[in-house]
Structure formats: C-alpha cells, structure tokens
Image 1 (cartoon, rainbow, N blue to C red):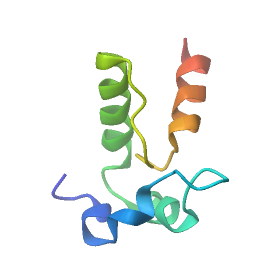
Image 2: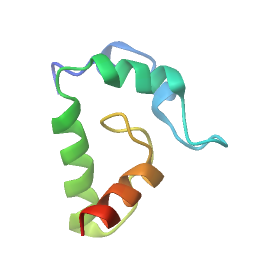
Image 3: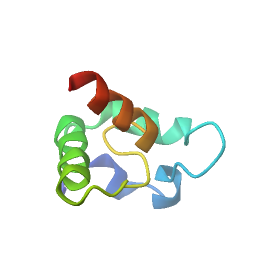
Length: 74
C-alpha cells in the first residue's frame, strides 16, 4: 500500500457511487500505479472472503466492473 498512488490523492476520487460508475480521474491514477494488479487482487479477495461488494475504484475498476470480471473468469 505504501507504493499506491491513491494514497497521494484525494480519497473521494475513488468512490463509485456516482451515476456512470466512478471517477475518470481515479482510473487515470490507477493506470499509472505500480501496484494496480495487487490492488485489484486485494479487492477481489475481500469480496470473495465475505461476499460483500467492496465499494470504490480498486485497481482501476469499479465494483460493477470487478463483478463482471469475476463472472467472466468463472
């Protein structure tokens, strides 16, 4: 987490509660982040562990996008 670029920005950018699925700015930050894949894997592990939807943009994907990716992988 120490290397994550999101820790250096406004955390409100990473909510996906807005219509349209989240912030483009947050996804641009994620595109450049060195731990993007680790972040996405962490969100998936959290969701798999307790079955709850983890809100926000993690690893460049909204919660909806992550659910779709999980369905496609299954």
